[in-house]
Length: 221
Length: 221
Image (tube, rainbow over all chains, first blue to last red; front, side, top):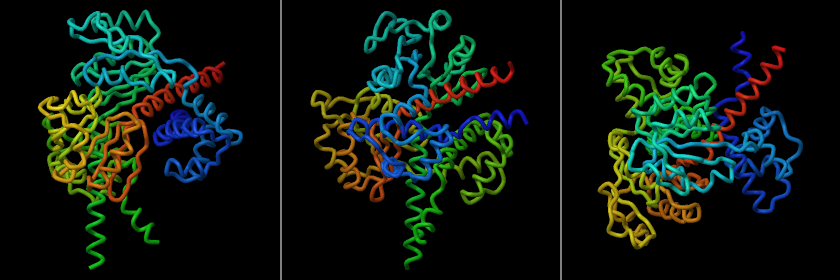
């Protein structure tokens, strides 16, 4: 029974993925000068139904009216953007560098303080102003500094050990790009980003469309 | 009515995202030497219920038995992996380079033939054996070569124009990493990968957990 009550409080994965889309689009509408918006306008923009938008906002506790700025701030608070998040990136290959150099994160209140790599040659270098430290001091760093989110962009083999270290040192969230599935553990939330999965989903949609097209043509004959 | 019949054929986004996870895990089990597996074993491995696994496989047309290799091939065929997919990457910044250098795609039957960039200095160079061509010849290239999937890793401003070109030239799928939402159009499937959205979903989960924790502590007092 207890588990049921607890899991009830956790919103669905689908909604947890729609919230950033709402936020991003409401931000864009504010930038465009929109003052008030309807659920239908927001829904049309993101290719969803207004009933879904209203249901989602209700599930998240409800918001008074649809003033664009109020809605933006409400969504931002739901997503937890009001608190500055300190991040570190472990692995400074192309993907690590891409994440460190990505311009959009600071605007969302995410800040990368340090990068770690096992390559001793990189020690003392910087990427976009972010210092590269040796991974041998990662545990010490995590214990001495406030790190909300640890980003893993290492090869698969190194990911689990780094994850365990993050759990042990009290990091709140792990954003994992290594091609392994890490599971939430002892208070650490995990977001696994599998590039291959995304590409396979696209492949599936292409195949599905081709099959439906073939079926349609067959029916028309 | 017609629309309803058509949309019925399209599986849910949630299932389209679970299929690659099934595939990846069944592949791993085959590598580990597993010969037969149950829906419960697969479910436990990916943190889902066996009822969900059976339901998903039924939705996809059903599979006879759970021989690991048969299941792997069946899932691969559903995802469309049996056909070699030719890809090009537009934009050769850190993210473009990361994708071009990613080792896992070839194994899944995806191959990157060329990269495009607007920087004339890069012309004639290669990344991981993939030639960098100037974006001015992209349209010509798309018309003269078989390109199944076009990957966009350009800044936001350039994405829409490249997308329109992909649509015009008959590319089947667009994998978009630029921070704009591209919508499926005239037979072109789109997979938008928003790094910021993924980070925001993680942020939301962290905040949700903290709130539930605070609520629990309050109830215990």
